Image (cartoon, rainbow, N blue to C red; front, side, top):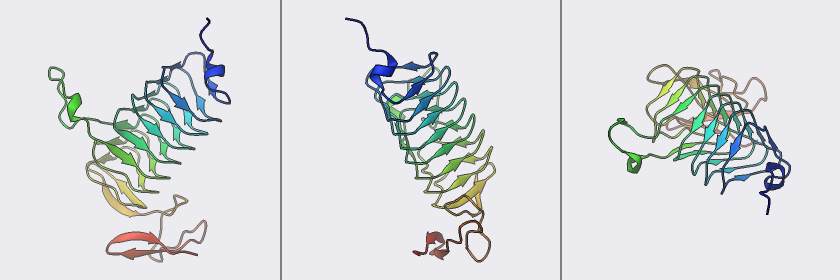
Length: 197
């Protein structure tokens, strides 16, 4: 019996012929997997996910609906992207704190969760075990070495909070009102929260 084609395995999904999709993978409708990317076993991609060129996802990685993963990004075991996450080109997720080529440390993989709607800029590095909050924005080239709160704007090496951003990704001024949408925010115990409309 002939093997199923990628179109039969994943109806409604666009998969470039150069991409490799292993067994035991789920990809939601409307998703696109581009040139030379590889999805490893146990990985689950939601609907309308875009995986750019030369990406590696897995094994056992979960990617929520409507995520955009730009070129040259690897999501290793332990990484979870909630819905609507943007991963900029060549951003890096580590999975072990003290890797050595001569010592096997797969039992030391740490989980890293990226909250809904967060953005990770190009060439940023997220050191494993440090969650990124909902709608946070990690600047290009930043190195995340501690948890990032919801709506935080972080930059530098090591990354430090330099401001707050709205759901729309706009930097908030002292009035904590989104200049694009008019949504209002407030600080509670040093953390930003949305004010319900």
